[in-house]
Amino acid sequence: MKKTLIIANWKMNPSTAEEANRLFNYTKKGIDNMRKSEIVICPPFPFISFLDFKNSNFKLGAQNCFTKEKGSFTGEVSALQLKSLNCNYVIIGHSERREYFNEPDEQVNKKIKIALKAGLTPIFCFGENKDQRNKNNIEKVLIKQIEKGLKDVKTKDISKIIFAYEPVWAIGTGHDCPLEEVQTINLFLKKIIFKKYNLSVSKNISIIYGGSVNSKNARDFIKETGMSGILVGGASLKSKEFIKIVKEINS
Ligand code: PGA
Image 1 (tube, helix red, strand yellow):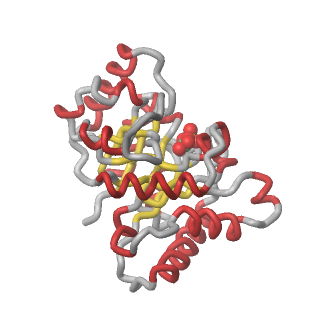
Image 2 (cartoon, protein in one colour; image 1 turned 180 degrees about the horizontal axis):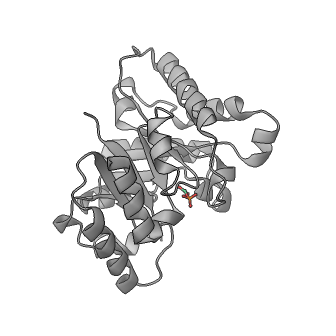
């Protein structure tokens, strides 16, 4: 049985190493032995080697990487460096990076390719904003983001990518996307990815949902929409709530 993916994106939190350690250890105590799910914690860069991932069942994820392998790029972090610290996953193209750091699709594409080359699993984020949704442009926006994000990505690598549908208007707002819509979008994404790569429908690709996931809606996103997992932001910073989410999915 394929495990349900539960990805915790801590973003730029918490503020100190001590707090990060506490959050990590509380979370670990509550859920370290859940067998039905793969739990990925994505802490900020400074805590990546500080937290004791080795003595846990959690997988380590980063929140970003640079487009190049190495060199004079002050302040950046490479996929190879992350891999050397036992990182398994890297979030790429999160809407906050697209919005606040002006990351265009072309950069997202380069990052996906460099992450794959380093042996990391890219968590490729995309999704429409409120305006695009109101104008009924969801499909058009998703097609563009997927097409550009996957430019020159080889067929053999498609099953190594996690596709994260994250409607921007749902992130951190408490307004989660209706289940029927998530289900429809899951099918739509499969259709365009299968068509683009000429894949047989039996091919396994991972599509997950993110945006205001909490302990009340998490189970439905998995059971009712066909999604392979969830990406959790705010709720992953409260260990009790995150533990509840994981337990709901494993129950
Ligand atoms: P949220 O964030 O769960 O706080 O909505 C999700 C995300 O940004 O990935």
